[in-house]
Image (cartoon, rainbow, N blue to C red; front, top):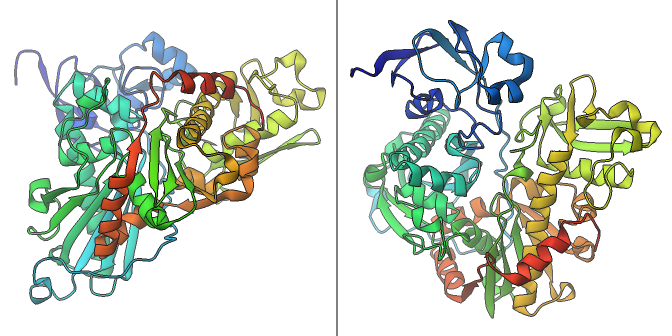
Length: 536
């Protein structure tokens, strides 16, 4: 190794990884496939990339002291702040399994047509197809029997690219800052897919060569990263992706552990920020067949949405950010066991429910929406989004208020801060302003919408009354809101199995038009108006 290099860093289990002297520990871990959460893309702002060091420890940085507090005395550091060295061992914080929304509703049924273009039935005994929804935060896979379309197994996991940032802008920025991050992000997803393939084949006693067809969907950035294509063109105006057409690759090109001759299809996108996941969701909803106008909203980090019918579809995207998925919140977590998912504030008491009934570890997106709605009704947050000071808090709730936060679970010390409220305020304003802009451009009002499909894991689990209370959705659409779960995954599976569904995707792309909201004065006006917490 060179003059400015050390031999390795050592993990707590004894595994060693080569590194350069002075290299950020986060980069070493990422390069070697060790997953570590880093929603702020290693900028030292979120405090999520915690590691515990033993041995001769480096002094904590100011960011570590601010974000970790007394934990620094127990050896905790931030992987993005500490430099790689041989003087200590590294223990990565264990991540709890994330409960990913794999179930979804296919509102439109397509004719099953599993022809693969080659006489696969002569080569494999049980031909299998794989559909994949690569979400910014989570990834879901579905394995189908190609002969009859039966779902054999589904699985999910956290997207390991979160080590490069919680949202697509962070990941595009990671590639622009260092082109070597592009293959690292591609390899991270392929490695995870191969792990899920191994789980499926082991569980079902199927050899990987039987997997003869793969369909991938996701937002435009995720599809670029999966294909190893540079997404940098989407970083600045005019936001030009390398491709939006349906893309065909070979499994052996990507390193997928399936039949080497298997064709991998990336679902077509509409624009830089309205991707294959929205196309897939519209396929599942059958929007290209409807005579009445419907609205599809994916309340994820990108806030993608589409409105229309067979006469035409209008799409847009808003930078909602990852707050609804728990990122950038003081005690925010994903949908993990122990995440606070429901909150009630009533009669001087605060009660919570957690996923799986486990001891609380943080608060997830559905919980934070519930919490803010309840605190608004209790007069603890005002309509401007201000978390009332200690002396202003209604006396029956004073025991839950500290100088830093409003406590949801005093024993666990988990609560909501003024900054958390602001994060949700900004995210919900972006989504609700996007809805208003989209409908105005389409010449539609709320009454003219037949149904509003709320897609994604967050959309499947939020309390819709709470969502309307904070102004995420208009109140007069409440009876039209219809959660569809992972519609993107369902639609991707339909395209895997049906030529009719593939034609539907092509039709959707042909009749869709994208409107860019960045720089839009109308969006800006709606956005500032929607910052208030009000029901409309």
